[in-house]
Image (cartoon, rainbow, N blue to C red; front, side, top):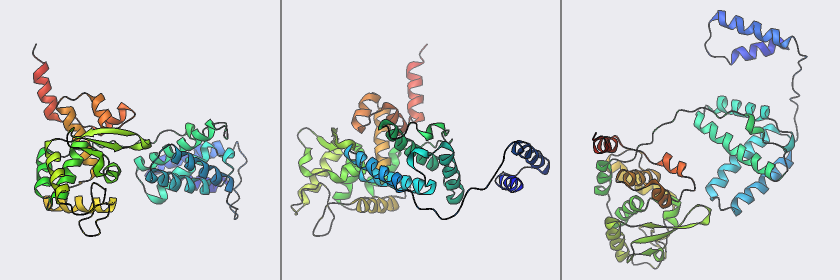
Length: 330
């Protein structure tokens, strides 16, 4: 049994030299000599339904707290997989169970470290809630170290790319969508929920229903004002939605419909990776570069934490160079 364990451990090691493998093998054998080792019972087990019961209660609490349907679906997907794999009473789950699940998930599905760390964070939120409700005495994920992942700088659209997108819009509706996303920095879900009545053209502002069912106000610039007004003046339907499909019966635009529109515009403009979130990030970056305080950008984006705003916003080298010349006058 011990020899089998040694062989399995060596199998999971990277490309070591034969001398290194021999040293590792001997070290494992020395440690195992101090223990009696037996294989885990792998016979068919009945899935522990108590864990899934607590998961359902947790998801209901997330819904009541205003989490989006997409977030709840993501939590359900990862947590139900984790709990079914571990298959223990919720109070018996250990940090070793969590670690083993994450390890196997990565090697079977070859996912990135950032994706794996997202699963760890979702599990941690779940067990933190269980601990708060006094269902569990501790959070087993606390003992699992954060998974290091390479931080990639997500670049905003350049001024040239943004202008290419504008020029590639083939309808007033599509141009209004691009201008509205850029000016207001709203999320895709927020844009799709907007109604005509949410807009005040006299004040140039829009009432947005954001995460947690919290309302906030965002604003139209001159271009978005003009193109939204033009688009609405061309509408002949009575749908209260701000953006609707181009063909009758002109239903409220869906997320899939929005993605298709932006993909077509991006393809024509030959601009890569165009999506609502990138326009949102571009808006935030441009506002910061123009001198808007980050606290106000945070308010505009609807972020609880200013650290989240820092992640969304990129500081361009041009603005760094400009401010260096501006402030280094001594």
